[in-house]
Amino acid sequence: MADLVWDDVKCFFDPDVMGSLPDVRVPDTSVEDWQAVIDLVVEKGWTYQYSEGESVLPMPRAETVLSRPRDAECAVLRVWPTADVLAIFRFHAAVEVDFDVDLRELQGQQRLEVFCGFLREIGRRLGKSVLMDPEGDSGRPVLGFDVEVDRVVLLADPQVG
Image 1 (cartoon, rainbow, N blue to C red):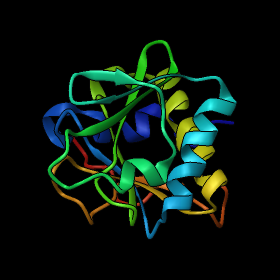
Image 2: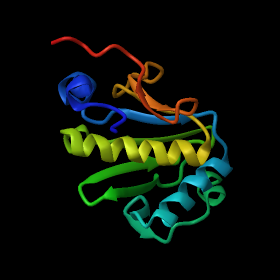
Image 3: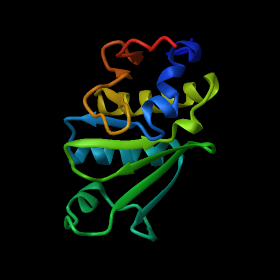
Image 4: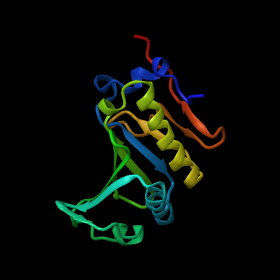
């Protein structure tokens, strides 16, 4: 059974409502949590690409990435859990694993299930909630992986519309 049903949540996947790149985050994390995410990506066999600025590089350990100088080129990990769904992780700080997804890639029940599965995998590996906020509106999650119930749940009322 699906965690969420498309018709119930499609308003949260409308780029005109949420912005096209909502903020997905795992708060209260550590360098070890970042490394666990990297290890998960490799173990699952998901396609990925690590880059610093325009340079594509081998994936370093999380502590190496997170200890880079603040003025260094932006470190980005692109992960494709499926060929047509991309998550972009940015290593801003150890205290929060954060990534973007493009809502235009997450239309319909099948893509929603891919996204929910991705959130579940990360949440289960870290033993922490994974939250999705509207783009640029961190702190107001609309849905996320709930550790207690071990599934993705709604955290806000869908807009009627």
